[in-house]
Amino acid sequence: MRHLSLGYSPCPNDTFIFYGLIHGKVPCPEVEFIERLEDVETLNQLALRGQLDLTKISYHALGHLRDDYVLLHSGGALGRGCGPLLIATEKTSMAKLRGKKIAVPGQLTTANLLLQLYSDGYENVLILPFDQIMAAVQQGRADAGVIIHESRFTYRQYGLKQVLDLGQWWEEESGYPIPLGGILAKRTLGAPLIKKIDAALRQSIEYAYAHPEEPRSYIKQHAQELDNGVINNHIELYVNNFSVDLGDEGIQAVHSLLSRAEERGIIPPCELPLFTEM
Image (tube, rainbow, N blue to C red; front, side, top):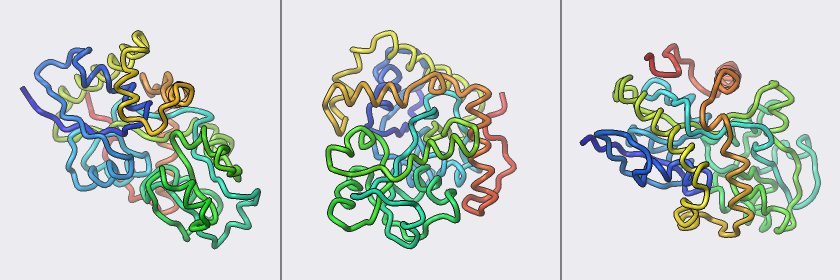
């Protein structure tokens, strides 16, 4: 039996996706997964140190990990209408936020990458855990904040206003859906094992779709927001056909994001293939 470390976030979309794989509902012979649930920026940093065999990461982080990891076709978060939102206490403009302090949910998050790709980028950022950003904006510790995950559904309850939907901006700018997070495997695992895991992950998603109530207690055990409506909205927004398989459009979206980041000097170039060679 081979033991592999597997990192993913406690957010409902990830616990929904990985439930079947972790709880033995789908076969992955001769492999036992040791899960580690952390916020996505922690996972990004763990992957940079090579401490996880398999992990969810931000696509921004992928730009720094391509020498050691390959992308899986299944399990990620990519879609339309699901990008990070820039919020503030009052309506304002991106131009007026130039030079102001903007809270972001991690240096290597896709949320921060989109902020830096917008116009000439924004250098004055405050790095905070994603669940502390709304409070930081409310309290005046940041002039604005980039929010992700459940915060997309709850920011109005805190009296905050949307300044810009960075995902919508990306979609209009590029014509592609927004790549938020993907699942990586260490290249050293080898193509046959990586292919087996990718197939099992796809089956895990299909299992969750077929038995939507079964993962509910596991999801609530880890969710930030326990309201069923918020959890359902979260899963519906971030788990979709691209999660089952990136497909050609998803792959093109990822390549577009990474190439734009390379052109701006935000991530280093890499000549290795993005996926394992089967």
